[in-house]
Image 1: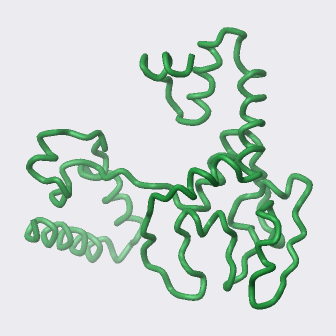
Image 2: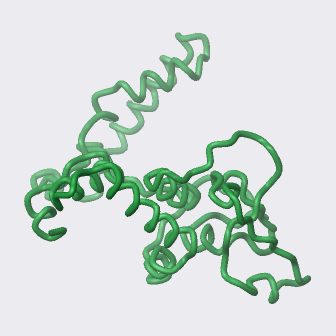
Length: 210
């Protein structure tokens, strides 16, 4: 396993030098490789031989970063504000969050389309980042972070069920499904899956949704 990883690193390093230190060329080499393009579907034979996938026999499944979790929900609902540039904004968050920080801070919650701007533009304080980002494993903004460590906690489910942004997204995607699909429940289920997962439901998923 160590030999395989060392050999892969040597190949990339050699190609980087031959390509004139072009990072674009290196990225293209990686993303077009057979290893990178493998499916992440679980296979029993690979799990038995290499449970940690150290030999890269399949693609590893990845979790969305905290900011992308929010942006993906808003995009699927069709309400993501795609404006580029400008000052930071104040999307909804639990009332009184900043009453317990070193100094009481104001949070003038946005009321127009700006409340649905990309998470990149969310105002944050290093001592008290937005609770949604903290819950979904965003790093401490006071230190350097080279890799985010994902976790699974009940707070994440509660956030998705109760945070104002996600309840607004749920209502918006319901309207989008009803207005963009036929009256049949099967059509609406197909539309919902396409918007959220970019695929149609399996037979089992369709039965559960109906």
